[in-house]
Length: 233
Image (cartoon, rainbow, N blue to C red; front, side, top):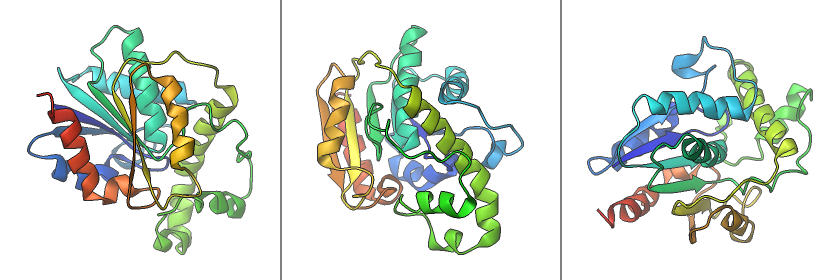
């Protein structure tokens, strides 16, 4: 069993470094990242979420495991869901399980405020709504200047998707929807129920201690993932 790991907006594959170690030895993992960051810094940003999913699909298909699960955090959750649809459309083996964390269902963001073209100060106020953004980043002018284009690109991908989203067929893959119990500005147990209509299987909704980035920080999440994916093997 392998885990396919998809990062949050503004993130890169190294966000999963701690989790990758904790998943071993039972679960090996592959962490992917989008262009314009980390090891792919010299590449141009993708222009929409469909292109982002296609990019990850092209990377994955070169090394598609026989048995695998997908783990996505925040933006990585919607990417994981759409990636599963892409795999289904291409008649490729589907993941055995999806773990989607820290993001509401695809139809839940139509009324989000516009962030395209807003000032840098206003943009960072939006970013700070996602609990867990390091204080040293917010206090460091050069770091903010470095990360702002990456974050803006990802946030604009999501905004365009939110504004243009139309209904999508539910998928028949077991899934757990995960959220942090302190991530109250972004998600809640009640709001997470919206994911159920996007699956034909029974969806498990679980909370863990932590904020928006609990997935990277709470070791109990790894225990939960192992229990889920290994129980039938």
